[in-house]
Image (tube, rainbow, N blue to C red; front, side):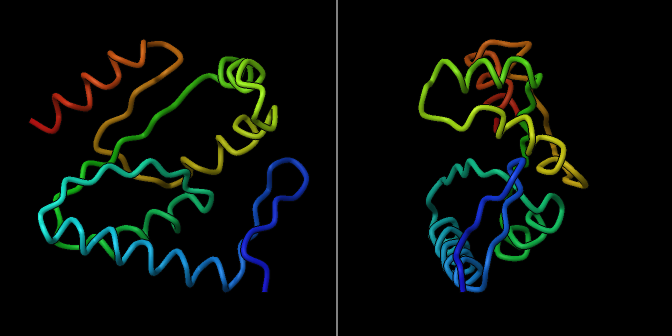
Length: 127
């Protein structure tokens, strides 16, 4: 079974092999956090709320700050072009899906604010 397949328009399909690795990875993250490690995870929820639900299940009982990072599609497309190692248009195509039904404690807009300002807003919520 395929791990990950990227189709037209940025659609991503994952198979059983990916789900097995994902579950092991999430269990490992939870174990590290329960052991006292301060963990930051940067993830793209390609399944929207269902993706967040899988992560929530593994992190149950842990203090988690859910941060949504948004950016205007024209800006993110320009960033993909400038980096030169990205599929141009992929982030814009995936943007509606990754936030669909996802609940955040805080949202930042990396197109309207500098990265340092976004980081400060997040740090302020962590205390």
